[in-house]
Length: 517
View 1 (cartoon, rainbow, N blue to C red):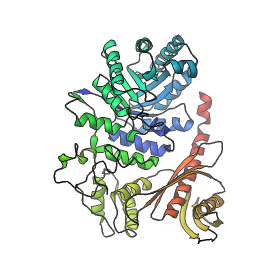
View 2: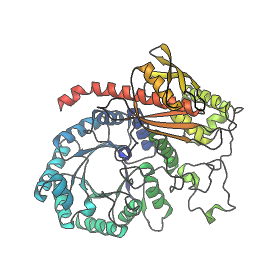
View 3: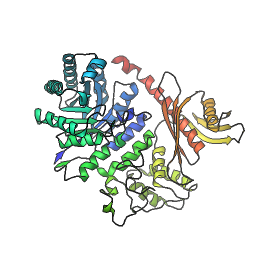
């Protein structure tokens, strides 16, 4: 079998999706799940982008043992130094450096001649090799680059020590046949020990097709993201690439990946919950309706013979639709543990199991039936490790038509309990204002989204907010979960406040590092 390496960039390119930013703790959680998925290379971020990115990569590097840990770096010494320092703790490490190679980028963005670009690329690869053995070089906007120049710069960086060459379709411009022909020509031109990679964007909806055509023509690494997250229209989706290779063995004869496909669905759900970005219901492989069961994973199919309409098994991606176990307020700890195992959570300690079981019982008292989506949401909410500087204890609301909306809250801060009230233009406004009053920190709401986690009038509400607490710092995300939408909103706003304070603390600790480089 020839193995295609799966290079996951959810934590780097995926996080560049508007609204998809993650805390350090969330990034570590996703990275460990990617390792469980058996991703070959995890691109954990862009170390030079910010102290927070550096901190996240460095922490992930201390945790991930079996996947290669990678940081992106422009072809600049300071970027490469930051990348090398960030990934230093990782047993398996790679620096991924890049520079644009298309005429339009070289002229208008870089304002450099082709010869200058080649010299910069060679310097970047040589300098990266002084820190690590595994160096990848990317020709940014290769999809619109001239083949003659691509061969020239690739020859130079291979001689400088690059072992993997990435050919990105940065703006999603190429068609599958074009990408296939480009890869075939490069693979045949260069030595067999060089791995050619592709990184395809989805601007024309062709990212997965372009990636697969590239594999058929000799690419042996694919750069992709969970759920197809990424800038603009996103990237090629990991789940689509992996399952296409698995299902179409007749086309991909002798080609495989290391991916543990049974972890695809749990990974998709984790990324969805962490980012607040759900795949559309008809999303291939991981969408809610992908196996024609609108209610999720409780039913055993609606067809007499699945293969008349299904070309893969739901179980292959970790979606156990045979599981008819219904959970409610009378369910015991043993049944609940079995359900968690079916959802992919099999390594919980007794303490963690007890914690989430108590949250489940409280929810079950309020709901007729607890769905798998509810449990997945509870799991992600329960194990959010962001320090809880502020904690909501209770919320009381008052409103009526043509009335004056008000909110009273009891909030815990540093072992002290504070109670206050506020009047707002609406109920949500009053809720956020009372939190501002108690904390003394005023936030500006940039985005607010609420959705039902599962079906029914008693569905859990999941609220996502984006808030600016300091005009000189980026907006932060907050997530809240409750059967009461107003309580979920308050929790989300407080979560955003805690994330802001945690980020502010990390930034203050990184001053010495910034000075050192």
